[in-house]
Length: 365
Ligand code: V47
Image (spheres, rainbow, N blue to C red):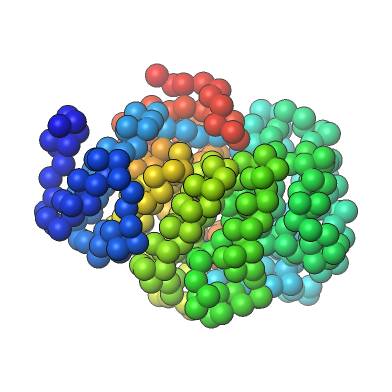
């Protein structure tokens, strides 16, 4: 019997068959995932997820010196969960100039994460220029840019296929793709909250194409609005299926919905729900190496505790973030390297500074 198995005790004994499967390296089913979400045994689930995380990564926990750039919030879409998007004339609408974008970057950064609105007046060439200008000015900063819905928008305005768009972006300097825009893979929720945005099939196809071209990409799930637990598990299973096919996903990032003034729900889900979602992601997504605890949305305290519930990555220093801070997220807007090291050490894990592809820069033993 593996030593860690001896430490696993459940107050909810119905989890024992699930734990047996996990310890035997067997894959969990949709039903198992739903069973985990129904259980109140947060610590049992957390210990199981931490066991799996420690088998893969030990105590090592990644972070990256990065910067988020959201070049504009002008957006043709009207997603009901989003407080970031704006129309021309709205008081909070903005467009960043190239100088403004460059002024937010520095040579010390390892990664820049670029996503924004679907601007009706910006030609595709402008989006390409944002990437190429950054790449020329800061060749050492790896560029993670444009979500699948943005790639789809570029296809619409250029009448090109995703592979052509991605080839042009690669030429301009894009290295990896972020995982945003997946929201929740449910037609029911899409029709209710983001009817103008691509659904699961197109999101997965664009990532499949990117993986086929050798890009590594991330994947996300927006939870804590009107989705059900079963829909969360379906979402994870569909990502797992694509990962079986391509192996192209680097990390999964569960995104805790910030209600702001959307009126969709009264408040953000509890820390308990955040931790359970992180832990269940680790258990369901047996083929995705990294599970990120995105402190910007979960908050720093829960984000740090999540490192004991299956997450092995704290994302990054971020610098500035507009998408959820416009929805009144309470987290700080940016952190220093020292603060991330402290958060990881507080969770009794070993900080490892990485680049965008998880190459190790420095281990803080
Ligand atoms: O796609 C929008 C979400 C995403 C809200 O790939 C909201 O490494 C919560 O995808 N409350 C963008 N979430 C952020 C994102 C991301 C973040 C960090 C790392 C990575 C990565 C990707 O934010 C959107 C949408 O799903 N979002 N509004 C909101 N009110």
